[in-house]
Image (cartoon, rainbow, N blue to C red; front, side, top):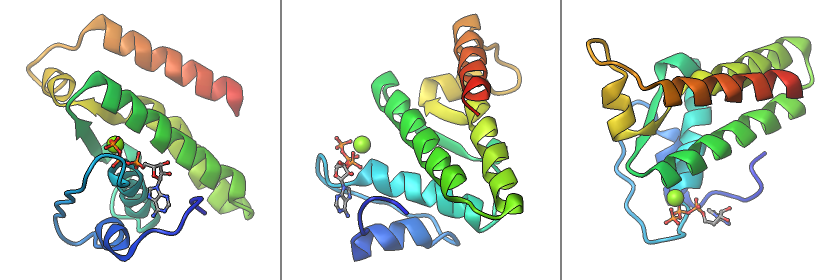
Length: 136
Ligand SMILES: Nc1ncnc2c1ncn2[C@@H]1O[C@H](COP(=O)(O)OP(=O)(O)OP(=O)(O)O)[C@@H](O)[C@H]1O
Ligand SMILES: [Mg+2]
């Protein structure tokens, strides 16, 4: 369970997966939290796997925060899962998120086919992967 109850607007944005959603709210109103829940709901619903979701933001700081928060929410779901099959699923997702497309708009553009990826980005991903494997 996430640690708080989503407001009706947050719930709508996190749960209406069959349409595009524009969520506009002031600073600290829960935009990132809602996006993380939407990300998780897409996985729960089986609409896409981690490798097929692009979660993109503008600044490195926001991208890092989003990364950490998606990661920690997936870890929470993995730890809460009781039956072996769902435990395996959340574990796979937790590992997959290490190389997921959660980053900046400029980083996303740079990694599309036909463009080249910086070594720094690959290096950061590899070290995140190593950390996640050690922790499981
Ligand atoms: N429905 C809610 N009930 C209680 N707390 C909430 C709720 N939604 C978000 N929060 C809390 O509010 C704080 C800010 O949330 P969050 O970081 O998601 O906001 P934000 O809109 O992304 O902020 P920023 O504008 O700084 O990017 C967090 O501590 C989060 O746990
Ligand atoms: Mg935010």
